[in-house]
Length: 284
Image (cartoon, rainbow, N blue to C red):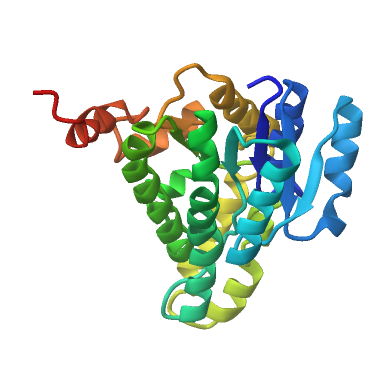
């Protein structure tokens, strides 16, 4: 991956920012995208402190035309694309009786269809480079969590999409990896709309349960209980540089234990061993 071209979405803060700097520090040419480049200051400062440069570009992953244009521009400017890191996402706290269908559709657009659109646009170029797709999902893509119905539904969709795509992509030389963090000390939880959710359910039958959930979420997202963005970025860059990247990887022992409640094939190898056989050419 040294001197390879890596496109990363959602890099204005948190995991995306840390991954952009970490990948550039390991020798990759990083194209770092974010919805609003006016928020690029923290990334620029972090890159400067690390002594690296990143190519920052605007991209709203819910804009299908912009997705294609940015991917094509990256290839035109840099000559190829070796890896895509789907990181852009948005949380949403609430429950279906109180939420609107538009809020559910919005969660799917950024967390699921954004991943689909970027992956579709990148695949022709990744086939040419024998590249890889790395997507930041969540333990919430394996274990449904209270008051995260819209978010978990989108992440479950991401997991199903990529696990299904993985053997097909591998047949044309492209690896697919799903990265599953647990709690991380980023702005993500703060941007999930907890305050708005509390207002919506105030005085309803859901209020006691949401109050309890919020207390739990705040306790597990504090600095002592959560991973730092750099820790997750280290896992992502290890995947980018791995000779044989896994189909699925959790970013901490806590994440492994949590998804292990329902998932025993932690690295995805057992599922891939079965489904890859379904598409193997007949050698008889």
